[in-house]
Image (cartoon, rainbow, N blue to C red; front, side, top):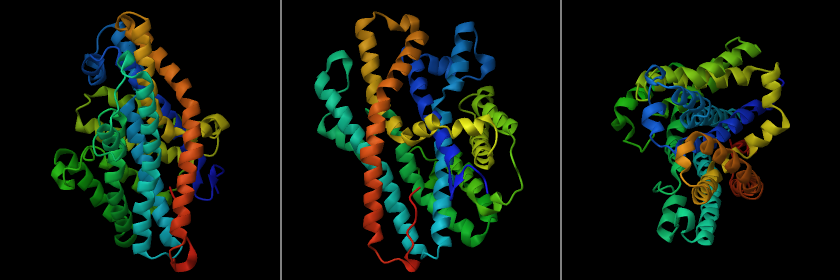
Amino acid sequence: MQKNRKGSHIAALDGLRGYAALAVTMYHGILHFDTSLIDRVLYQPVANVHGVDDLVCKVLLALFNGESAVILFFVLSGYVLASSIDRSLDAGRKCLIVSVEFLVKRAWRIYPAMFACMVFYWVLSRLLDGRIGYATINAVIFWSSVTLYRVSVHGPSWSLQVEMLAAPFILAFALMRRYLGFFSLVLVMAYAMFSIEYPVLIGNANNLWPYLIAFVIGIVVASPEFGAIRFEPKPAHIVIALITFIFFRQIVSRNAISGLIAHSLLAGLLVFAVSRSHTGRIHQFLNSRISQFFGRISYSFYLLNVPVLLLVWGTISAVFPHPEQHYLGWGIVSGVIATVLTMPFAWACERYIERPSMHLIRSVLAVAPKQGGVSARVA
């Protein structure tokens, strides 16, 4: 039995998710005051980046990379959700009941915190009333954002769209693996790869086509067949997995499909190594109280840092003329300040919105008749 497991829960993965969420804030902060960095540095292979300043930015944007974080989130979702489906079916639950509950719980996991975030965003918008260039949140923008119908004022919520669109695929793929065998996941992997170039294969689902492969990799890593592989990672394995995951994508252009697939595979390797590890300083660090705190608030933090960042950016631009002249310095400062300011709000949202909402949906679904009287744990 691995020491980092509590039942089927792997605490170190929570810590990993927490630091990925923190990285997103720094990523947006670094890019904000000079958006030309996106084409000049971020999307370029490292061989095409010139000058000390741009090379420093390239390293920082690799360390604090929004797409790396999102790919890791998607792999973790595939891993955790497929495991949850397996546990429910292993307990003797009917497939139809498990499937319906899975989709209901998935939606309920995502929407309450998004609603709370947009209320917070709306309050700031009303208080600032257009000052410092802050976004105006009217009823149309509010509800289209809450429902994830349209991504406008809350850019990172595109990944929540992807999570919702991916849920039926995760369910279908997990059931295929269970009833048709592990070889079906190889077919699914090929299908996900083809959909990168041909989104019509997944119904042109908005933004899902580049990242379905990440969810599939998570499902593969979570499968019992993959878990049967005898491998006890040493701390060096995690270090290597982490370094390659962070930096190898920088070798190729951001548009390279090979880079996207390799990046997703390396995220899966990192999740696999962390999930199997129970020794070493990295394991201890990811299981520390601070890491677990970051992991616990990661979802609310990911949402709430957006309105806070806009507040910080607007304040910096209003107080200090031409922050773009020191874009990297002000970008890092804005990311740090936004991180600190977002923490208490993220804690409150996790404590008073996320937890009660999940308790509520468990209670509601517990009323329904269940074969064997066992309810599925929410991932």
